[in-house]
Length: 541
Picture (tube, helix red, strand yellow):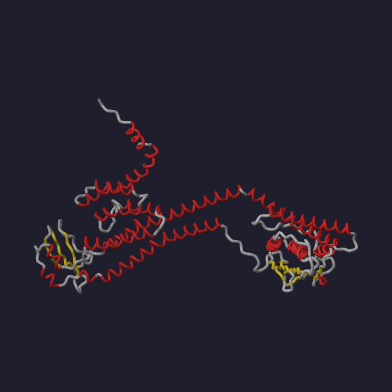
């Protein structure tokens, strides 16, 4: 009775015959069948001897190359080199030209680094020297070997490298597109954060200034001896409430303000003279200097007005407002000097407060973000800001702003490319470099090969010269091994022009005659023995 297969055997057979696995192996099978077509044609053409066996051995070797083409691409390229050298020391054979080109191209696609492939090509080229010297007794076939290696393997490899780099460029482009899509999805959140920053900036610009002036007026009333004690106490409570409101405002600004947002672009609703007048009315000592005020006709716009170009007007108003607010909080009772002048196409604004008078002063609450926002506002207007303490204990804030609507020379930083743009530009440069290499490297190697052939033609002439005495010692019937001891190791690659072909079954070699360059010694062999020696002369056709 026939035994049924076990369940484990059925599972193993099912796993190995999975349609998905079979479909994954179909490209490799198709590639192997394609590469086997040229060797099959050579076998059908009637090869014999070692060449036939080398061609038949190519079928399993090509199967091995296809199997390892992904894990070891360079090994896959080296596999068809061996049977190619058996068929021809020049590496040029139609049986394996297709295999060398296809596997070389796939190696260029799959090998990320170029250095291992370059070492491999160099090793193959150097290995061709002893192969040609021992098999052909001349180095001229080595130049054909190099030409075949260059055009049939290296050039497809370079094309594969270019294809790989182009695929990386496309992949980088899709990654950048995906990144931009994610950024667009987050745009709503960033918009809400920017709006919160605008709210924080408006609160700091308007409410902070007004609360500072209220606290300053309440402090003056609290110290006024003309008022009754209950009135002074109420003024003190008002000053404390204004300070508490200022502290509460600082807390709210800390929540709303974000580190990556600039100052809001809110235009000033009043000029600098009106702002200074309000500060004076609150009890501050403020002096406004405008040296070029008398040079303008009546009705001309003043610095800090909204008619200044771009964001210069709001920036001037914001600078004076912030400086007066800081002076009221940190140096109450100190004199403040505001100077605005035009010079060399620029508007220069300087606000300086003197050192605070001695004596106790109400504690000031500061959020520490006023100067940071002010610097951003001036930068967005195209100007520069410098602030810091003065030698006499005061504080100054000075800004240079443009009057022509553009940024000042040397102010601001040039826009820097984004990381995505830098990544895409790098990928493009690599593709252009690979394309240049694909064109220039074969041309440079071909030129170097021509130069090497010329140099070899000049120096190799003496390697094939057979002296007259050795030629006279040769006798027909001598074994070829004895003849090889008397002749040079290298012989001429081709006989003199016009030399008739040897009889069927004979193999002839030719050696140079010094100093005659138009003739050569001819030695013909059959069945391992010398059958003829003669002098072959060049015949003009």
